[in-house]
Image 1 (cartoon, rainbow, N blue to C red):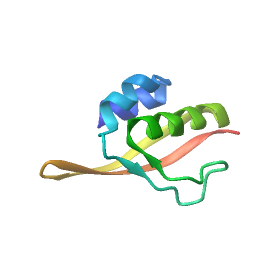
Image 2: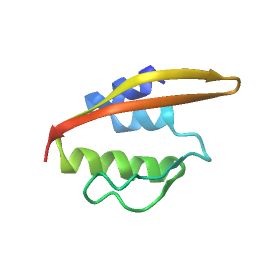
Image 3: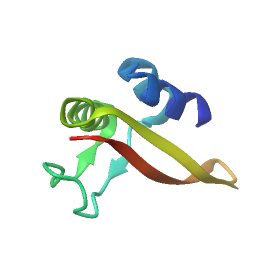
Length: 85
C-alpha cells in the first residue's frame, strides 16, 4: 500500500495501479474533487482517476493517515490531497 501511494505521489501511474488496484477495486468519490463524479472500477478505472488527478492538480499528494490489516484486505485512510488546481 505504501509503495502504491508513494508511486502515486511521484506520478508513476502504472506502478501505483499495479500496487493498489485489485481487479475488483472501486473508488466512490465523495464529491469533493472537481471533475471526479463517476465510480471508478478496476485497474483501468483507477488509472483514469489517477490521470485525472495529475491533469487537474500540480503535484498532487496523497498521504496515508492509517492502514488497518483486515486479513486478506487492507483498509487505507488517505488524507491531504494537496496541489494547486
